[in-house]
Image (cartoon, rainbow, N blue to C red):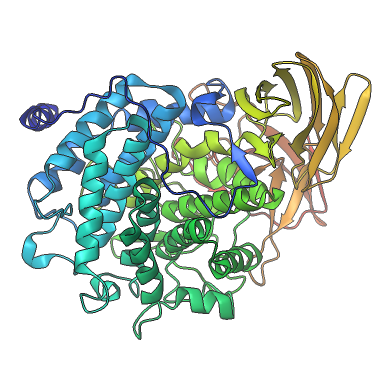
Length: 608
């Protein structure tokens, strides 16, 4: 397979992909809505590779992105038609994940793979701009626009971090073909795909990106056509429904991944246009999901669909050769992206809290720390079926195994940055982060060092190194689960309110140190599933689980990846039991059955 891949690369070597001395592109269209939270540049956010999240990010790179069989995801473009209907999505997803990783850490091995993949993909584009996996007679009937969506996302992400002009030109050709194909008096985009047209109209997200990088008003007009197409007689009525009742279950057919993909595009279109209804619809959907459809592990959906209010089945089941369960990986990642957009636009801590919940539970919980494979669903009870879904591409390439690496690659953007121009730390992930704030005459750069064993404990040390001493606000997010949050600078102590931002204003000197202490007590969280009397156990940001391969252990086995293990005494009204708990994200990694739902305990105490 590797020999075949290298042959493909060689055969397209005539394309010039040199990026030496390239000035990286900047958007040509200014946003009408300015972010309240602006993250550090990815290249200025260095997550500690030895930290809990850093280790998972490294696994994503070393055991997934760098080992992926790239020939298998390119083959459908070289020999059309593809063997599976949405097979075309994986190349773009790889490029999106790899571009974010490369921007953050400059990994040249991954860069070389990106270059090779982009070269082959672009060379497979048809003269009219078509870059799907169908033969001509079968175009625009199934998952064709969907494949173009991910190729646009992937190649635009690649262009953003390399300045590679062939990638941008390929995207423009794709965009032009879509405009020529769909619109008033042309093909109806709603009729070109599945799920009441939501699959094809989710191309909104990269068309907004394409407009931003080209300033070609035709792309903005096409965005408006997409939004208007939702109101076609057979359309999903996304905007109309979410403005009228805000219920995602009652919108279209409730298909969560496709709907959230559309909302990610819509919230970014709001940035460009300032049309308030777009933001309101997305905010309504967010409120509905958090209130009625969110699992405590930070994901939503069962069997790929939103369900009725407070119907949050914890299990999974097999129908024929298909397993359905809670928390589809693609849903987890698009839900993460929606929260990310809302955090940037509003600066509200509630969105950072949901991002934390997602990262520490459902996102890394879908990744095997042993080998980097991915499970499609993450049920609350059962086992994690790593690499058991492949959609016809061996060994284990599925929509979710291509999505989860994208979510992991986005993590550095969520950690710190500036809130209304002032420094803010939102996630307590160890590392070194740099950012700039307004100074008297010029921007002042600040370096922040974060040291901690978080989430194993709640002690965090933060050192600030401004270019020069000065008075400014430092904002620290107080997690919603922390009832006792203290920050100390020299002899001053500051107490934070759960779920809020703590602002510390003072004269800061280079080398000033902030020590943070957060309580990490065990908490019982009622199961939000209707009529359930069970509870989840939470410690800090993590939901805990028992794993049947650890049920008689006094310590973690040598082959276990992770160092959190809590022996806990639990008391009911009838008896006492001992629970051996690990984070949900670590559970099931050695093939064991796990459980996160328990009887309602009267008392819960971590053993000494």
